[in-house]
Length: 335
Ligand code: ADP
Ligand code: MG
Image (tube, helix red, strand yellow):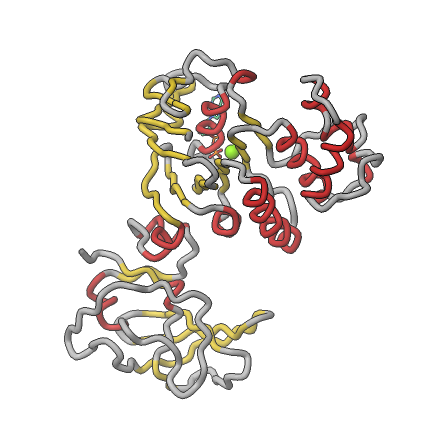
């Protein structure tokens, strides 16, 4: 198990990571999620042994890694752009670490790894002839070849376009589970984090602001900034939240909630108790490929996103019972 205790890292006296503590239990996938520049890569590089912490402790199964050089840690680090050896074939890229170690049966092991990442038969190709997604799969196979006790992934899918990223995220999730690889992934992309990880560590300006199981962090963002960063459309304070609690779905018309993670206890106030309707006026209707998004203006609250099913006929200006897309609504300021 990897453990970080109160780790700080500075560049020339300027702090990049401040007091970070987290654990990556064996066999789990933990994602560090935060905006660009918040210190994610720095943290990962310190775990790899490429940066020296200015304070705190990085340990593996209780042993301090401070004096252990990168190549003796047994970790593998994979970057956003994979960084393959362009003059070597796919098979030689994947088998690189194995040959360095003079491991037996390199050819068979390379074939198995290529099959694991869905690239059977690609061994003789050169990286230049592969798509971005295929190159990332090769990079992943190469990282897994060394059978690292910890895999460190730095924005592994960020260089790919959206559709491919989604597919590869699902594959990567399965590959990591199948290989049972303990993994620490850092990313600025919440979808990537949600697709890959079991646990989420949210970072901002060098500090960890929240961590826990994905579902818990999603359901209870610690503050407004975190909620917005997790993709919430709107953040209400406690008083306003009490008035919309329990109202999910356009009454009469079907509303499809993508997630139903709003689990805050109801607090009836001023007549707007749980389950009550709130009148709103439809401001805009926007069709996306899988849903119709309706923006409803609610007096006293403002504009709230609702997600209607494609069959729902909702006209702009129509009075409706409020359908809150609860998955995108953070309720804060409550205890
Ligand atoms: P992230 O990966 O979250 O985008 P980084 O860890 O790369 O963030 O950077 C965190 C902060 O540390 C940024 O302010 C960045 O400018 C700074 N930083 C990163 N690497 C170096 C470096 N080698 N020298 C000086 N400052 C750096
Ligand atoms: Mg980075």
